[in-house]
Length: 150
Image (cartoon, rainbow, N blue to C red; front, top):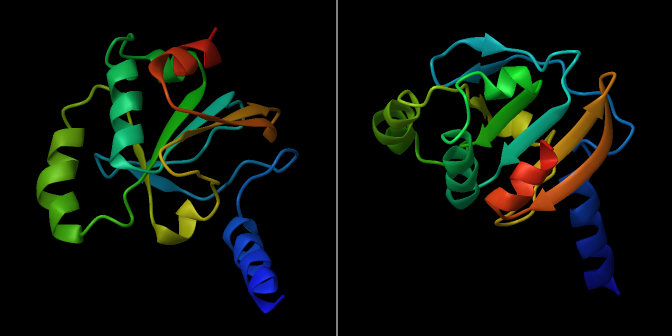
């Protein structure tokens, strides 16, 4: 019984601050790979969250096939959680590589990352209307990602 209560408390603590359907989008500022500050825009329609290197690769490969302004045109934000990455690796390997991409990647810190729910090896896709989350999906392929924008 104690184990069940512990697991339940752990799950509640894990998702207590994460966005759910009906919640307002976060208002905090998030830096991109160029150190430019961003806020999730009030007219945002989609928020895509990568929780791992694997999910980032899927999103990156998808976005590289699109126009440079694809995210802006579709009122979408791409958020990557690299807070668990060792700082030397992020500073000298990951960030220089990210700076080569023609789109912004919003990089959340450990505290900001708690605002977004994730599942292992899944891309989290938030649908947003009027600044409120209307749907949350967990996807794994570029085909599913493409369907989000159709």
